[in-house]
Length: 162
Image (cartoon, rainbow, N blue to C red; front, side):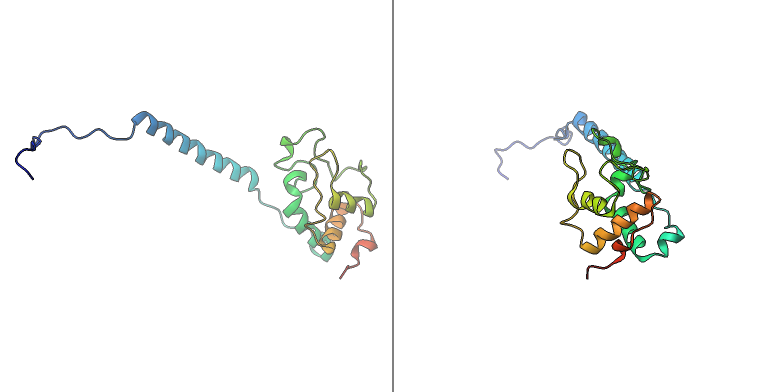
């Protein structure tokens, strides 16, 4: 150290913090809101699924169809197919279909139901799953949707494509 440089006194004030206290408060508040929002989303989307009823658990095609339905469809249609899934309130014009209704707008024959599941419905948020689901999963979820409506899965849906 050269003798030309002044030596700061021992009682010199500490340098100012580079963080603005107001900004730190806003960041802290944002973090609290973010955590609270994550908790709320977890509570809303993290609903537990009850075990399958005996008639579904004991039927391989319905059991498989239920697994597909809960993984792909329940977020909009709800666990029981009533159109009350967690995303349903965000979908309007037309609203999410209630699969437990006696009459379906797009038909209730197995080929019509499978076509809606595979191709979707134009002008709605119902996307087609035909490129994602294999033929056996498509038949299984079609059978399960029939079950949700109180119908018996037709024999043609019980035939494996493999």
